[in-house]
Length: 219
Image 1 (tube, helix red, strand yellow):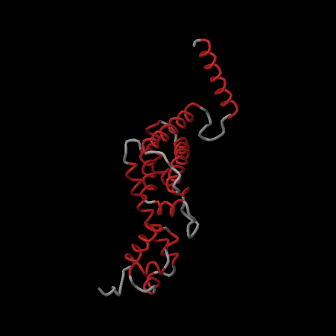
Image 2: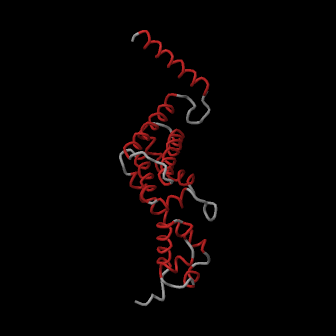
Image 3: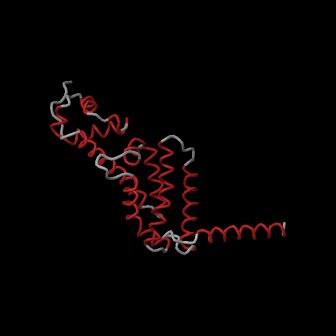
């Protein structure tokens, strides 16, 4: 069958997206797109001013897919937990797109992991306030700290260093969730970061000593 003479802009984007999805962003070149569609490189530069424009379109497509993953998580009973598990699922199922969005520099210096975190933080904030009965700034601290855990686990998965099962990951997220929520509620100034760290740790150590003493007295 003879090659088609014309392709739409969207078909070129789809071909570029397929290349990145399967081979990674470093594989995206005009020649790679041309080879994928069995055409010359000329139609690519007729539709796009540069390969940077193509990369921006591919990134937008990757962000749209990521948003579909996380939207499913936000619909769950505990939105943050759902978000976290979907974030990790995206890393498992779309490792090259995860690398593109969260482990590589952007063309124009915008986007990246922290911007994605802030975007999701704004979405989930009202649910965190309602579920845990906390203020907006406390919800943001909770999300920020838990997101660091989620991002670390997802990055370990993509780089081949994560050996945790899905149930173990769920336990890890639950443990950190309880710890951070308890700290926000019981330690004045924890959310803003201006609490007395020395006093808090001294109290924890003292409580441990008292518990140990009681256990020794009542074996």
